[in-house]
Picture 1 (tube, one colour):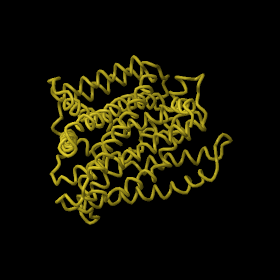
Picture 2: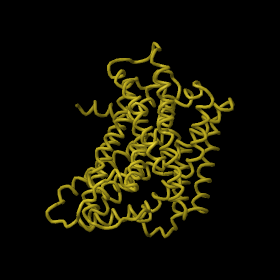
Picture 3: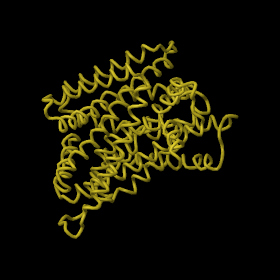
Picture 4: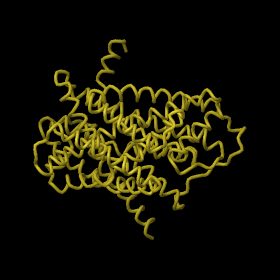
Length: 421
């Protein structure tokens, strides 16, 4: 590929990399790395399986607006108000907890990288929220698009380099650890797997966020509106990229952390700190900066993208639910609410953050089949329209969706059986 073509392809990238920035957060840095740390490569197959089975649901983030010209939230409203209300309520129940969990991890890694700041974790988290909010208000979508693009590329390179170095340095014959194999009949192992699948590569509600970014990108650059083909290229770069990085984070956990034989903290912040320290111990002090940068870039991108997504969803859902005119200031009001609510939650309930995160991730996991089904209904609705792009691949997605819904429904049933029996 020539340099000019590469530059043109790079310019196409936008919402797909914003999606990647939102997805490559706790699910990758903490969950994927912890999966490798606890079970070595045992759960690698589930990284591929989760990404494969969520594809038809998440691809609707591009397919529906490309066909209908509307976001998935508009689609849910067209299906019926109860569908939209379900999504609205789920967002309200989980958004502050999720944002709080993300930003406190980001704050912890920031303080690890810059101890001279001398701030408490809550103060650092609040500062990060305010700075991110200012960036989004001043720079609007353009700042999010540009910043995320470069951050995701930088964190991808840092993660791949770190995992490759760990693979080169790994010597199985010189280690004394024993592998802890994953056991399907072990309750704690199954609960971890359910949480792992639920957020790998991301919860399916991210498809609605992605569709809003898709529509906003076209509003931001109407003269350079991307073709449908370009939009799919953008989506798959982000989607495949998140899957590949999940593998690399799992490799880091397996090669560096599992091999150490240490016990790991359930706290996401402490866990990230242990990862950095283990790298420094195993590969040399020079590697500390590399892995710290990879962790920090990962969490900054997630903090910024999620902080943009939740106000967009709130604003659009409120407008569609109550049929009020959507004004630019509604995003601003929603953004202030999310920042203030997240900061207050951290200040009052930081000690219970793990329980709240468990609640939020459980809600996200349990509604996976429901949102997946809603997206499937929209797929069926647009399938017979003139603007729909059909073909063998689309027929494959049509057949894959019921299989995916069945898979996630079975895991939801397993969750309830484990929880209550």
